[in-house]
Amino acid sequence: MNDQTLKKKAASGFAYRFAERVLARGISFVLQLILARLLMPEEYGLVALVTVLITICDVFVTYGFGNALVANKNSDSLDFSTCFYFCIALSALLYLIVFTSAPVVAKFYNNPLLTPVIRVMGLRIPLAAVNSVQHAYVSKHLRFKKFFYATLIGTVVSGVIAVVMAYMGYGVWALVEQYLGNSLIDTVCLWFIVGWRPTREFSFERLKAIYSYGWKILAVGLIDTVYSRLRSLLIGKMYSSQDLAYYNRGYSFPSFGMRLIEPTVNSVLFPTLANCNDNQAQMRHITRRVLQVSTYLISPILIGLIVTAEPLVKVLLTEKWLPCVVYLQIGCAANLFRCPQFINNCVIKASGRSGLLLKLDILKKGIGLLILIASARMGVIWIAWSLVLVYFISMMINIVPNYEILQYGHLEQFKDILVNLAPAVLMGVCVYPIGLLGLPDLLTLVLQIVAGAAVYLGLSVITKNESYHFALSYTKRNVIPKLRGRKG
Image (cartoon, rainbow, N blue to C red; front, top):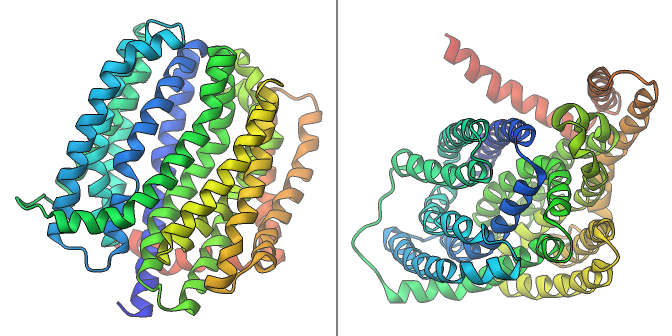
């Protein structure tokens, strides 16, 4: 694949993946707002706790092995089929463990309802096994348009059913349906849309090669997932399910923005860099462009959420959720450091240094665990603030090896980040006084959003922001002609 073709596929893949994330997460976010009005914080806290446990199990079938298929330029039908059957067998074993241990977990958290909820939500594990190989196939061939339709259908159908169930008084089971139903529909849709099918072949030799690369990525994913969910587990045990609900609900707002960017970048940047990992100049150019565009998109969202947090929560969730405002603002501050972190992770992973990635992750999580332990008994608010410090330290550590890999170190990356962060902060300063006027919450929110968008875009034009002009030119060259062609 030549340089020009690779750049076109990467740009197209990023556009489709980002569009999929925007629509799917946007629809899901709206549905969550409706559910939050119909359900109580305690019910959200219960499902949030179970989601953490299932997500940890998911790591064993969704991390590592699929990445190994993408990283290997010569992966063929035998590799994909071998990985598929292995993941299915592993997921069956994991679900058996989850099913039998559910009463023990329920007793530990002193909530009998956890037993049936865990057993039903655990069915996601075998679905994730099928889905992981489908995702690897699409990523390997840079066919991200396939994700667009499957994700959209799953999000809409499962979300509408959940809202109806919540309205009819099913409580926590409405959230369970949304979680499991989304995964089921997404997997079934991809099964037909992607068109890939496992063949009747299996190779222990191929499995050994997949495992030799994948176990390190798996270990990194497991450490990262357990560590990132440890805060929720601690809050659920040491404090109340209501505290956990406020913490998770507040953090869901900045997570919404990051879930638009992070999966898009990871699924597109990793295979793109893996295809040119013998060309340092090309890797550097692609990485720099992705960092610039990603921070350009995410910075105004996070800064805007910090400024508009209180009227936003009042309008969208009602006043019963006001305690989550402070967690929303802290979560936004933490996620400002998240984007450079996962982009630099992709570079290390694509360069084939999975061992280095594991060592760095152990270092970061070791530091983070010490910070978490120090803050755990000081209150939920301090647990939230500790994440800001952890993300900053992790970002600094992740950049270090990429000076050697790409000659793209701290100073160069900070310059590219600040070019977009500075106007976003200035936008926040301009928008904040609107909240002091004492206007109705909805009017305040609308004025802040409109003013913020106008200021940020205006600054982009005045400063001739590189990321703004890149996004604008790409839209004119690729998106608008396609839309006109469809209308014609």
